[in-house]
Length: 238
Figure (cartoon, helix red, strand yellow):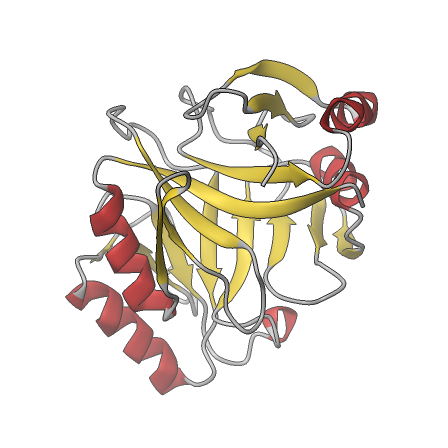
């Protein structure tokens, strides 16, 4: 496709601290680039980066996008949880039940994430970052499969998931009811166009995106929203 998923980006009051946390949890290298700021590089499973973008805006509501981390064994799940807590994470309650096999945590700035129990076949082979879990409807999943050219690997009711043909983390949408937006999303997807960026903007708009503004952090970035109103960015050429 003419656009690809370049990064998952997080607003951060202290980008370097948050990068150190996620580097320690996921075992990814910290990249320092004058243009990119602080980011984590890809891993053996995916070249999608994780970017940490400076922001003074406080976190006030639960994020609509979060990470699901995988576990190869019950001990590996415990090790991941212990590592996250040592690095500054904490346990949180978002309404999970006592019998859930996932452990729900927050990073040092309160961004929610889940450490999934061992034996989860849906995320098997995805790598340590198993899924980028989005609050969204089937319409959003259908939009993104067309936008990125990633096939649907799950389509049941309102729940959908896509995955790059090369593998790596799945991007999933959990279906309604949707959470309140609560202002600008602190976690969002960043795309890069391989060809004519204006043509790609037109294509994304034809697929159901809407214009949401310009430049969240970098002049020239174009901010769009998917059919659920979740913002994403088409970055300047990389």
